[in-house]
Image 1 (cartoon, helix red, strand yellow):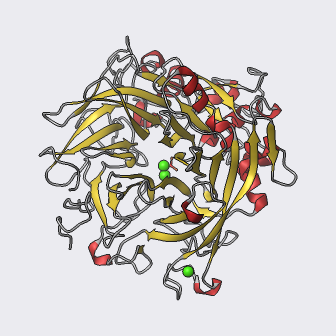
Image 2: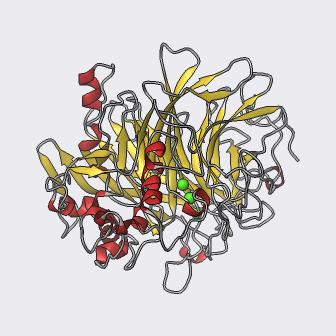
Image 3: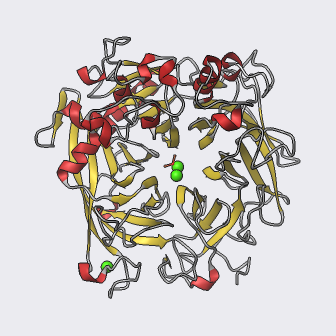
Length: 598
Ligand code: FEO
Ligand code: CA
Ligand code: CA
Ligand code: CA
């Protein structure tokens, strides 16, 4: 079993055992507190949370629902404070409203849901004595962005006919952001947010392109189309083309208009993570979370500038408008016959191979060119999935978060699961997705050629094939499997200051709750995976941030169990029996004040 002190630096804690507690469970010697919950007021004038009397006006000044991605940004000059930015991916109406009738939502309920989507920026403050992290309500930088906040479309497809609607004949102004899943923090002090499953908000779609994006032909579950015709594709065909982008938000300027970057393509963006080339240009990795969909890279052509003047910030906010968008194609190096779909390693002992980044569109100040036969620039950027289909990109097992290691430059691509792999009519196992009916997912390690972020070719190998370590079809970078924690359905990832990869999970198929685990990526303990925390009933773990002395997680959709409701809750977290279940952000620290895991 584990010994605490022998683990890699940063992972020296007693692992939390798999469990089904309706609680956030952390290792012995660690403390925790709820930083902020759904409904807590963050803007001036916002009322206290009252679950029995919710209004859209109140919600628009309160922390939103279903926190996913988290960013913590520095606040120079404000001692002990940082600026927290959170995504609010979606709403769970049956868990939000007492007596909710799914067939007949009221206008007020729908408008509360609009206001509960989007982003929150809220200043947080550390109490050095107790370790607690709490929200600073009414700070001037606190902000809510919702499903009705004005956004600007930028990049080569902005202004295209495909993006014009009756409310916006310019094709450049969108109201709101939806289904923001994970994201990233840029080196120029903004945050990126992936619009993921936007298809679920649009009714009555019938075009082939809509089908490729999963839009439905009938009414939606939330029935927003009854209250705003822009959610009805039959009445407003192009509105859905204005969702599914990477959003950029400037949390230091509360008056700024957030942007949707068309240059990064339109699909179910899980996340968008940024690194810089040696000469200072941005490179963004982003995955399309769908079974058999692709992952992408954008290489910018303009250099980031340093400083905080308005002109520098304006320049940096334009960095993602010019550059080349690529999609990944992977080739295995073992004979196809050795990949039998069981997860058994091929004769060379590794699932590995080479890959290329296939260009789709290059945008410059003078205009943009499409590299895809038969598709215009605008078509590639609005129907990016079809472009990936055309160029023969590799169909992956649901690409979620992607993170380059700040220590080694290697890039970790999380494939959460794909139970349809190998089913009749679907693609079978290949070396990069080697298990049919892949329930537990895997993580791919990608090495850009010569370590250059802008490279157009790469090598890859599977770093981790998830599941119960006792299952022969699992792999932990070669580390002894009797010394690792079980893991299922990896989703969001983050690096700690020591270079360990921390993995949060969504949808654990091993009979225990989701949680957060850390794994060494280098040195002789590479592959040693240890569970750090678990989350309450029905929740997934999101947004991990690992600082020297603090771990932050977003506990998303606690209590989301089939048949649960306000009246019949499956979870009482975080406030106990009789209180409504609330998604919330949790902070964890070491009770003795020392660094995490050392
Ligand atoms: Fe919102 Fe791909 O998870
Ligand atoms: Ca191989
Ligand atoms: Ca996710
Ligand atoms: Ca997920």
